[in-house]
Amino acid sequence: MAIIKIDDLSSMHLDVLKEIGNIGSGNAATSLSEMLGIMVDISVPNVKLLGFDEAVQFLGGPEKVAIGMLVRLSGDISGMMLYVIQESFAANLAKAIMGKESLSILELDEMDTSLISEVGNIMSASYVNAIASLSGMFIDISVPSLCVDMAGAILSVPAIEFSKIGDKVLFIDDSFIMGDNEVRSNMILVPELDSLNKLFSVLGIQ
Amino acid sequence: MSNLINIGISDLNIAKGDDTLVTYALGSCVGICLYDKTKQIAGLAHIMLPWSKESANASDNKRRFADTGITELIMMMNMSGASASRLTAKIAGGAQMFATNSAVFNIGERNVEAVKKVLATYKIPIIAEETGSNFGRTVFFSAADGIMQVKAAGKPTKNV
Image (cartoon, rainbow over all chains, first blue to last red; front, side, top):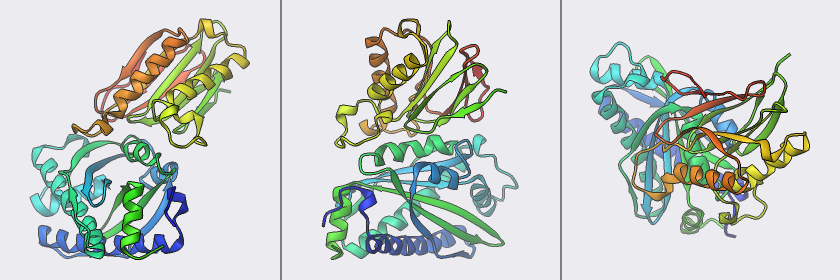
């Protein structure tokens, strides 16, 4: 049965998406570890369908300033992915790579921006590769576009895109251990409905 | 006692007396503040898409769209004693949060355009506008004086 709205996802569909989240997060931890030259561990990611307000609360409330990175998916799957990191994560990255003691995300310099974009790139590619390797589909991703602003304003972009297919967003909550610090990041996946149906069909899930 | 009335995404409400309406973190969405100065009745709608007819889903929330959202807000204000002929509008939001060439991301601009067209059909003048650019905005709208306060991350607060 084709899915008409995102709310129609069965627990089996969700399990598949969770597995994609697991593989993607595993890939991401490995890539991050290579890039940073430190051990990066990851706990089992939390994959869920959240309403807009719930997702915003999860990110610390509508006015909490965060970094959002948006990539477009094309090829066999169309849609967008939004990767959100908090200031603490960005500060950890800046410390690990550039030895910076403090970082304010509202005052990122060129180096900070380029480092964070690269991490966004790696993270997005990790999830996309998880989908591609599971399904054998070809998926292309755009260069990430970066935005530092209030979480509610950042999330309005996928919310608008998602509103065509449902009132909920697919939310992956990751917790990484980098050295002595635990940092969290979130991936929000907005597939087009046709693409989602195609993915489930390729994977043999009805 | 003055109250702060929170308007979520795709929602709207009105306020009187000392009450203030607020909607947090407008990105590409647009906040429409309508005011009847004589009756001191304020209304605020937070829309996320331009036109209801572009939606494939007839059961969609009417407050999500500029056309049906603004119409409902005017009706609600009328019912509580405001007069459509006295209404003035202040609008905020409609930013382009992510830089790209894709038309989909230009939804902020399309939202602002739709809001202006709808307000024009009701002959409601826009007396202040804080729209466009690339940053999110929180809007407070006071029923007592019709002042719209716009807050943005890392920027000074504006009263218009």
